[in-house]
Structures are given as structure tokens and as C-alpha cells.
Amino acid sequence: MGRKTEVYAEDGKQDLVITREFDLPLEMLFKAYVEPEIVEQWMSTKVLKLESRKHGSYQFETTDPKGNAHGFNGVIHEFIPNQKITRTFEMENTPFDAWIEYLEFEKLTESTSKLNMHVVYKSIAQRDQIVQLPFAQGLNWAHNRLQDVVGKI
Image (tube, rainbow, N blue to C red; front, side, top):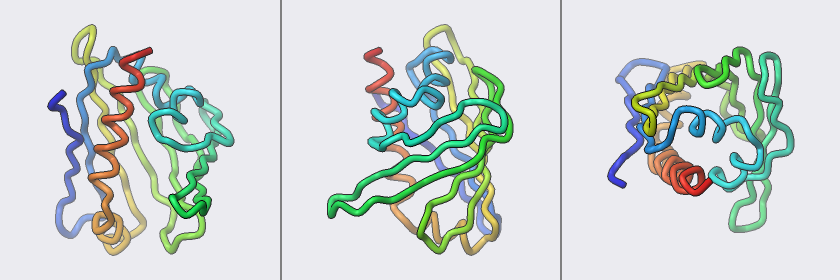
């Protein structure tokens, strides 16, 4: 599969736009973000809590190669099945402030769909720090895993 996650980071802005097309029906792409068993597989993380609903929250934990646990959490502000999730995202024990993610799910054909993400950070400096990390590569890797895992369901 030649698809790739695109990350658009305009200079002087505190946001990112991320897009990715998947060879998955819309409903399956959406499930990949809301069903704990699927999230654990493609994100390679432990889902401690995932309340897929408006005013729900989530908590994930990932262990690095040295055995250190890293937590991620947030609150879901908007939840429209197969269409939209608006949520905060916070990396615990890091210098980064929480940010907000607008995820929109789009049907392209019966067997393909697209994820559009708009991520807004507290500041331009924070956004630039995130972009300096291997962020785009990690996101593309995760989306490739999502395609592989969900494609086999």
C-alpha cells in the first residue's frame, strides 16, 4: 500500500493539519479509534480507559524499550459516530501542555475512507517542538499499523 500520512505545518501557526486515506470502510476506520481492543493493537499501547462518548475520557499507557511507562490521557468533547471526535490530548510527565484534536472521518467509497485531523497547540513554540520530534514518522507508522490491523478484521 502506497498511502502515507500527510502532516501540514504552516510556519508561524500553532496548529497542524494531518490527513490520511485508508483502504478501509468508514465504519471500520472509526472503530479503530473507539474500540479499546483495536486501539491497543494498532497503537501498541495499553488502554486503561476509553469512554467513547461525549464527555467521556480516555487513558493510555505505553512502555518504552527500557521499561518506562508513559501515560497519555484526555477528554472527549464531541462524539458523532462515524463522523467526528473532538478531544484533548495530554502526554503525562512532559513539558508539553495539553492540546486539542479535531478528528473528522470521511467516506470516500464503500471500501475507502479518510481521516482529517486538525490539532491545535497552546503556542507556536509548543507546536514547533512537537514537529521536531519524530512525530510524522511515528504517526505514519501508527497509521500503517491501523491499516494492517483493521484490514484483517
